[in-house]
Length: 82
Image (cartoon, rainbow, N blue to C red; front, side, top):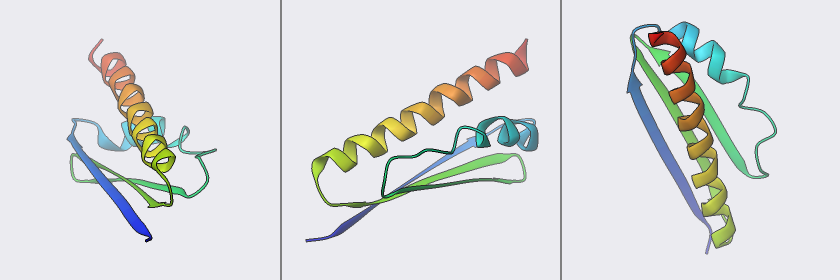
């Protein structure tokens, strides 16, 4: 059976467009079958990861992709606050 996994992360920020530019550069070289989109709506970053789950390893790859995004977001926000 073919299942699609979609995860959406929303984060409010004071400088969405500049943070978006900083994060977008890392959205390349994703594992096969995983797609991401990142955009700003007002002061909110919207990050979506989707994948067709063919085996459990795909779920782990999605988790790692989200973890990378959150780690990079944290780093950008720390720089923004200093």
